[in-house]
Length: 195
Image (cartoon, rainbow, N blue to C red; front, side, top):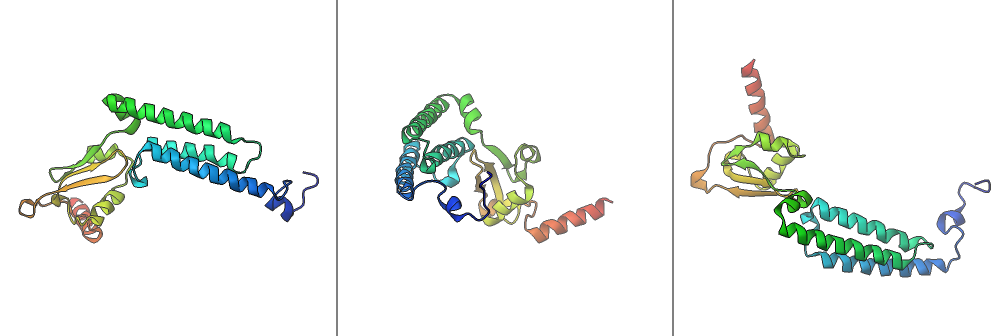
């Protein structure tokens, strides 16, 4: 560090490598890109929005294993390929075992939770989830829900998505309003009346 100079563009841009090394970085990156693509294709057809925490860990692990060989000259491509093969095989083995055992499946993927049952908001189940009430109500509003009485069932799925099942129009129930202005008005009125 005694030869360090602030703003040394040669060091910042390419360090001590010859310019031809950029061609190798290009080749490594193309190789790792196609390896990542092949690895993700072999895990199934889920979209990013449908990923569980387990699958997100898989993708982050693959991304980490892919990054180093792309531009570190001292990291070979074969060790990265071995990491990919081991990670993908481990993932496939875990998903196979999870499909054969409900207990292991719940441990790996988690389980769904019912948040609205028969038009009634389940406070107890909601407390168990890492989800803010405002965030949940926003999700409902984005799907056209004005009050909880419209919803027969609502589940938070293992991937964090919310599944809704609605009452037919003739079977709607009265319920907690979730439109922001009505919710605040009801909350303020109830608080004032309780005093």
